[in-house]
Length: 163
Image (cartoon, rainbow, N blue to C red; front, side):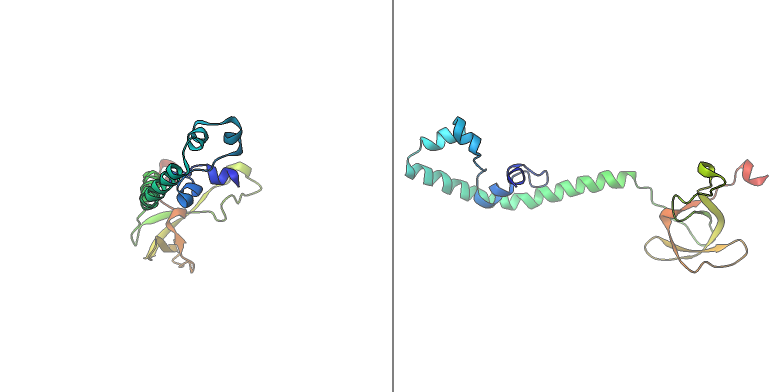
């Protein structure tokens, strides 16, 4: 619990204790070795100490207001890093595609690690919202369950596929 109260999370850039009380926690070790912060506070008169605490409380409201802004900036950075690696897929009706063999990791015991990971060819017969598609196999049968675009890839015939 002490580590949680005294460590600075990256999203708020301050400790939860400091957001609540206006100053950081004084650790027992700091009292026993007389750290600079403790020595400074012990040298203050009671009036000067109260004024210093009130000044910290005045700054506390500014710190609390700045904390959500820092959190939003950090969330935007994380989203930008995540979205940089995402390649959106868009298919249209009539596109020829391959479908991942689901569940992922299902292997043919005869082939072992050489088991295929994609099956198909399918054509897109309906584009649904949210990146989902309804597929039709080559015989014309429509698959009842729609499939998400992350389990699809465009079919590009190669020399091996033609033979």
